[in-house]
Image (cartoon, rainbow, N blue to C red; front, top):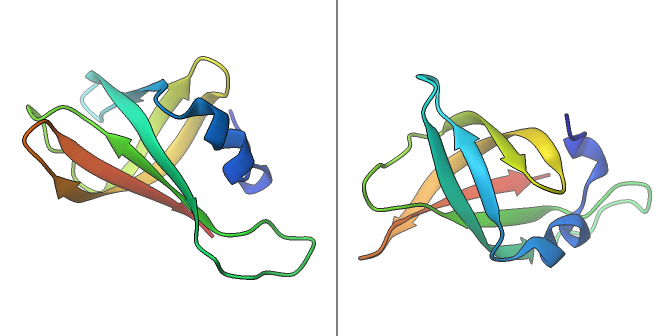
Length: 100
């Protein structure tokens, strides 16, 4: 499993528009697209990473509640992320994962 305390925005930036597979509590599998990686702008001590956030886009047919989800990426492998729905448009729902 990916050690999230050791990753930074630079680990995710090359993966923009890649597919991530999310597994719900009932075992359903959904695809999410990474559409944005942004730094929070908070300065932290040199030994710590900067805060950043990931924005994922899902389909319009299922709104996911905020909670921890197991996700998988072809390069990064398995990870558990707490995602929060933050917006929607005509094509889908958007979810944010924040790394502090």
